[in-house]
Amino acid sequence: MIEHPYQNLRGGRWLVGNLHTHTTASDGERDHQAVIDDYAGRGYGFLAITDHDIYTSLADYEQYDAQGMILVPGNEISANGPHVLHVGSAAWVAPHADRQQVIDEVNELGGGFALFNHPNWHGNFNHCPQELLQACEGYVGLEIYNGVICRLDGSPYATNRWDMLLSAGRRLWGFANDDSHAASGDVGLGWNVAYVEEETASGVVEALRAGRFYASTGVEISQIQVEGNRIWIETENAARIVALRAGAKRIAVADGREIEVEVPERAGYVRFECWGAGEAFAWTQPFFCEEDE
Ligand SMILES: [Zn+2]
Ligand SMILES: [Zn+2]
Image (cartoon, rainbow, N blue to C red; front, top):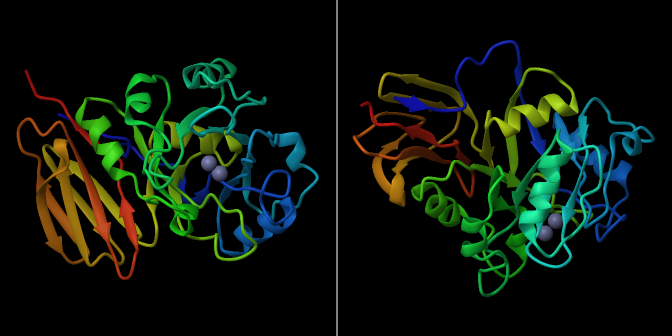
């Protein structure tokens, strides 16, 4: 049996969004409205402003023109350790040195979720140690792509961290975010395409927490279908699609816009990387493969 987050999608639509953005309230170069205008002008459907240890609430957003976007509350827990993104709750989350306490506080507030940011930042590629990712519970995922790290030391990608956790049996989602700070060049690098049923901040949070999204840097996924133990992925613009199982072992590679795979026994999970032109990717969430008894 295959368990996955793309089942029974109806009554909603796919919206593009970025969950990680800075403004002049912390170390970003532009004010809230300028940042909102930039994302809205690019056709985004939702945006979370997540300044370093400074919370932006739904009430705070009321002073800005959302330009039709759904604005989602949040802050980036930054001081005292590896950065954790808090998205969606109705209150500020303090930067306790104990990151488990941060995650627990997000979950106790309700209405939001926590994820780990840019694990492979810094020259040692170890902003967030794998041991911490393994030890913590109650977070929904991690940034497998963080745009701003493209111009800093380390790697913007962290699918290695994700595969290690998934291979250990964890059920975690992969996010792509800009982490935009600069006035130009930081926006539109990585985003999440979520199937949102209720077009409110809580509806966006619900979709993301359930994993009803894929992460992208430029490839668009048009169909995801599962029948029995077969999975079919179709994209608008992939040149190659790679299917991986637990251990990040490739089980299939297809050149072109689509792929169909039969999930092998004891795969653990299967996920798809869709590679496009230049540095464009799309990453599906994992399809978890339970062995039938
Ligand atoms: Zn950060
Ligand atoms: Zn950040």
